[in-house]
Length: 497
Ligand code: AMP
Image 1 (cartoon, rainbow, N blue to C red):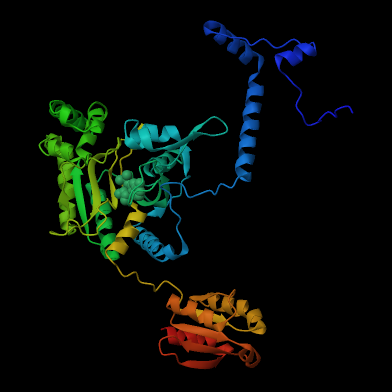
Image 2 (cartoon, protein in one colour):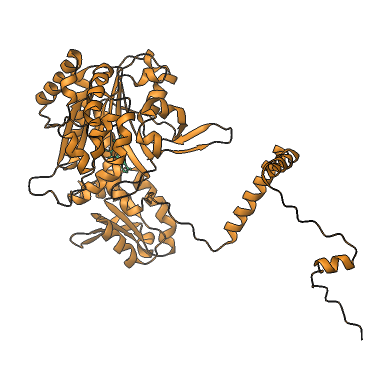
């Protein structure tokens, strides 16, 4: 019996088999050196650019399909943070306080896009800074433009000021902003790759009073929050004073360069002032003896700084002079300051986070460096995650008076039907009320009301819907009283006083 051919069996491709089938075997071509390069060029020329990009798209698509079909579970990126509902109480409290205080000081909100041109930060923050050199999330958009996720706000505010011709408005202009910023840093406690900043900028005034106002704002804010902080302050002088100082500093550091950490050895030629900021003990040892910038200030800068300090003294602001504070960005001139959690004596290793809660300063050359008219400016930005953490560490009681005072509970179908209308009516009347209509049992609704710490709970059951009444329960005493629905608002306002 003839052997049946197995249809699944692959055809033989061995040399012998091919000769049998009179097919010439393909010669294995060994290509070397220049020939190889030439061949590659020919192949490249044959495959048009269009075809290459088509192939790339296909590759990406198949990769995406493979990932979407795989069992891979996507995770939160390193250095990123989810802000969950339970984190909102402190966060909302802090933002409300910041907005209220900013408005009281005459600041107006400005919102700029998260995505900006890369050149904006290269021209302002500075190409030799860590932020621009190492930390930006950057990519090329579909039009080929180099863009970044903003690593800070000040250049964006300055760009908006120039682009919208705000120099034509009565000066100075006072802005506040808040939102996420992105820096590709090594994550650690209090250091994220996406974090939120709240900040102030004053554009169009050179007055030392404005520097003092922003520092006073910071002191008032932290006092209001019940947080103990230490304000550190220094003057970097103008670009002229800094040039002389930079040379002196370089001379001093060069003679000790072998002892500096590898990062500072690089900083020495590019941005020697950053060495003063270094936290490595061996570098700090050296910088402690370094010439101080304050001794190189020109008469104008010296006068400006003296006036800032006088204004602060007048306003009872408590500060520490730190001759080594430099803040590392290119645009800073004259006053610079940072806000640190206070550590009392003997508490050096207390649970305080020991990371700066905020920082700022004057940046007179910034607007001009971005193509605008000569416009002085000064500002501050606070790290929200770090302040929230400090609120928790220093166990500050956050007042929940902004939260709901009344909880609305309903039992049964007819009550559920009326619930939304009653809830909405009470909201409109200005009653701070919460609900959880997805829950049907009274027990679970009372549990939520209890956790929220409301003063009163309204209970609407079958009987109450028939009588057009509602029960008001005092959560502290447990007393319950039935009231007429028409008199509910009046009753609630009386009890919530
Ligand atoms: P800077 O302008 O870099 O001094 O930033 C201003 C403030 O933002 C700092 O004082 C911190 O409170 C906060 N901040 C800076 N970088 C980070 C980060 N990577 N993660 C969390 N907060 C940060």
